[in-house]
Length: 195
Ligand SMILES: CC(C)(COP(=O)(O)OP(=O)(O)OC[C@H]1O[C@@H](n2cnc3c(N)ncnc32)[C@H](O)[C@@H]1OP(=O)(O)O)[C@@H](O)C(=O)NCCC(=O)NCCS
Image (cartoon, protein in one colour):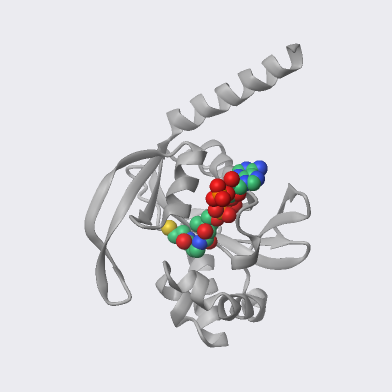
């Protein structure tokens, strides 16, 4: 089983078929929290639908090599990260993510996404990772900015959410941005060692 330790009792694991009951329980328990911004947060209501969601991730992984991962905290499924199909020519894809209502505000998604950014740019060699958030999803937009994604503008009525066309704030990180961020982090760590 793929498992990546994030420290402090958290880890990332491939979302597998056998996780469907736990995933369903998580989605149902967080229906109102997730459903505000994610259509599937409201529409997944049965084991079959949970299995279909996970199956989509497994198919994408087979095609693109980018896994849909769950975030476990102290052995409990509390969130996840998914990827849209990879545009091989542009070496580009888009990321999506979610956390349960009771685990927000502690940097867990920042840490999880940082781990996946390393995989996207360093291991897979993609050049561009896009991130879109509803213009009013301030938590998600703050996360994008905190991680160093560049704001590229507002895409008008680009997405359908609860039967309404909605605007998305578009962010992206390039491989060169990622490398620069890594260099800065290393320089900060070295400066701290000298003080
Ligand atoms: C979007 C979402 C994942 C953001 O979660 P989050 O908890 O705010 O993000 P992080 O895990 O990175 O935590 C950041 C928060 O923890 C705090 N924090 C504490 N320790 C931290 C650390 N070591 N590193 C970073 N942040 C830390 C930050 O100050 C911030 O809190 P604030 O928003 O009160 O300033 C979450 O709100 C969510 O799942 N929402 C519903 C689904 C959704 O909207 N998905 C995205 C669709 S585009």
